[in-house]
Length: 131
Image 1 (cartoon, rainbow, N blue to C red):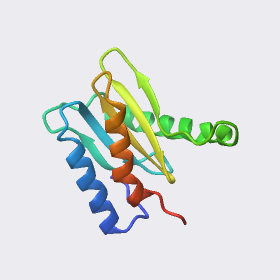
Image 2: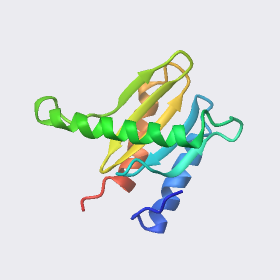
Image 3: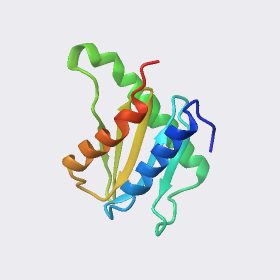
Image 4: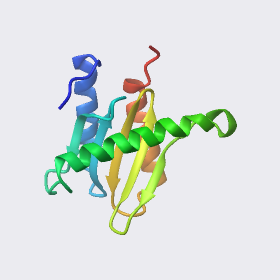
């Protein structure tokens, strides 16, 4: 995984959060994506085979991060994005912008809004850095 500018203690906190969230059987994947669209921590649940190739997943991370960055153009009109959900036939992708990072979830269909809010609360203290 690419190195991050986050201190080692924060990376460990992120990894612990990711592992705790992967205990939820509705979560297939959780990862923290940096400003360049690289996965810095997280992954698929241990009992699941990762979807697609690593290159395809890297492209997805970059595309989703770029999409969130482009949505910032409308923050002054509508307020900042809390999260973006994309429902597919077999899963949902949930992109959560926090600071300069993105928390990406791949879940079963109809993942509960209350769970998303708890995830945001768990990651904000670590990622919402005022640099």
